[in-house]
Image (cartoon, rainbow, N blue to C red; front, side, top):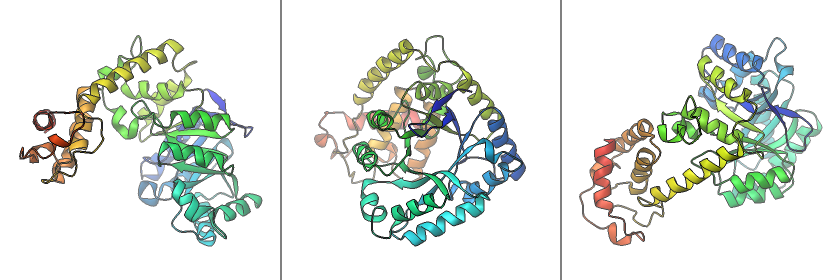
Length: 362
């Protein structure tokens, strides 16, 4: 296992973190998987109150018995439901009980946006004030946040100076936070990445992605995780592991001396830019074509078609297409009324490409 200094916080964390979002509900199996990861060198475990049907914190707490608590840095989250510091404290105390621990190492404002920070967090008698009190009492060691907002707002949250680490999305298919990740690292924040395999998208087989790395890799997921780990501004890459096979594969990936060479990263960047160019021949996601009078979700249909056509993520695309069918938003609903095509700034033949999408994914 390789370790990196976690920002300016004076601790070293394993490059691979254990995300407890998808651990089994079975107590014994969950404990077995978590301890296998920790025994393999993982020292960062991330959970949240609502994961695994609201049982993840309890399962993690059981896994950290028998001396395992002292081997890890524990992370969980507080959903910012309102601007009450008292309510925030109540949720913290519930997490401490469920985890059966006296303290939490990295405690996150969950899904923080710039708007919610201004309106619900940094307010009189609000969560931020209460977080500092909890830190003074030793209930939490570090004040953190997780993030799903626009990339430009990530810079603003870093610049508040109130946070010591952050949990953000970053992967081969979504690099929107890349500059802000570098900025946060420069400012001394610890940087943890969620979704290195794109919420499952990059876990599906893809020869196109596997072949981006000279010599190839064993799986698409390995390529995705190695890409994230190759970024020197990333300190921990979280992986939500639900089986012993996944734990063992990810441990092997994290054991490599170097995830990717500079030449390999350069090759991936070149290929991803070319893939982006090819994808934009289908759709840039501007949404000018919406709404469709017949409820076709045109951008989402084309996004899935790009995953299939450009990245070879066919299995994932077809699974997601079924969800569009269930909602009546799939390409097959198109009546060829033609209202969308004049609105497209790319002059894409939308009707023809919707026909192709239905043929490929339905």
